[in-house]
Structures are given as C-alpha cells and as structure tokens.
Image (cartoon, rainbow, N blue to C red; front, side, top):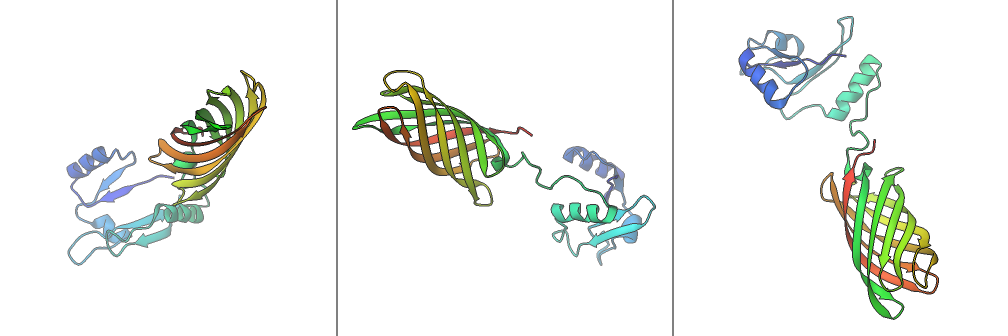
Length: 233
C-alpha cells in the first residue's frame, strides 16, 4: 500500500511543509487543483476540499470520504478500518500496545511510614513490574522495613481496574517471598491497595496503603511512589 498526500501549495512550499513535519511519503503539489477536483472537489472560494481517497492496485476507487470543512476529518481509527475493509488488509491497532502509559512496564519506588507492632517505622520498596495485560502486572520486589525486616525479596502480582480513559487505575497488589535478616527471617506476605495515575507516558505516581505479615509481626503502612514507565513490546 502506498500513501500520497495532495497539497494545494506551490511545489516549493509543499517541500518545506513536508520537511518541517518529517512526512516520509510522497507529497503532490496541486496548486491548480486539477487533482483535487477529481478526487475531492473544490470549495466556492477556490480551495480544495479535504478528503481521503483509497485506490486499489487496479486503479479503482474503493473508498472516498470528503470533508465539509478542515475540521470535519475522518479519525485515524476509522481510516485504518476503512483501509482494511476496502483492501482486505489487516494493519496494526491505532493505539499500538506499549505506547500508552497503562501498557508499559515500570520500575517503581515507593516509600512511606507506618507501624511495626506498637512502634512507628518506615517502609520502602523497589519493584520491577511487567504487564501481562492492562489489568495484571507481575514482577520482583525488594521491601525494606528497618525495625523487623531490613530486606524482603518478594514476587508481586498487581491487579488493576483502569479509570480516567486508562490514564489511571485502582490497584490491588499481593506479594510473597523471603525475609533475609533478623528475627523475622523466613517467609512473608503483603497486600496493598491504592491509586495509580500517569503523569506522562514515561512517569507515574501511586498512593497505597497496606499490611505485611512476617514471622513474628504484622505491619501496616502507607506509601507514596514514583515509577519510570518503559515499553517492553
């Protein structure tokens, strides 16, 4: 499939336009509107009507959409569906997985405070979470609580319910692993719940509350975190 954009500008202006926007497909100058009249039409003030025309390999027009104004344009999703339907192709999704923040893996640092037994303490964790889907993340986590569990080595699974057009999510996470030092050496478990939301495609923040169970202690905590998001596919 070949793409061709038609511009009503003079050839020199069209070339500058293409360079500025880094357009990689051919841009045809149509200053006298000869081509535009055939495929889209002309306005009453001698401007080309914006439109999309799909032509198959045999030269037959299989789809045409002509806009009534510059703001009346076919959406990217509708255009891809029209191409697939008209030419019998199957292209990539308009929102390719891995581009949106919610599709990305994350290196996540959380820190906060809480209680270890009857004593106040601090909490922190560092996790690498990878998406199995938009609703499930899984990955290793290191946990730190200086009083009773200086180092937990865990595996965490996070379940998410996306909100705000998938720019945020309610989360419920479960972790289990091994506490390496002190009296609580042995197996541990933890649960947390909270809110995750993206600041950009590369960064997110999260607010959580939760509890951790060690050999001799049950700890409660609240944390705030920052995550670096990156594509893995």
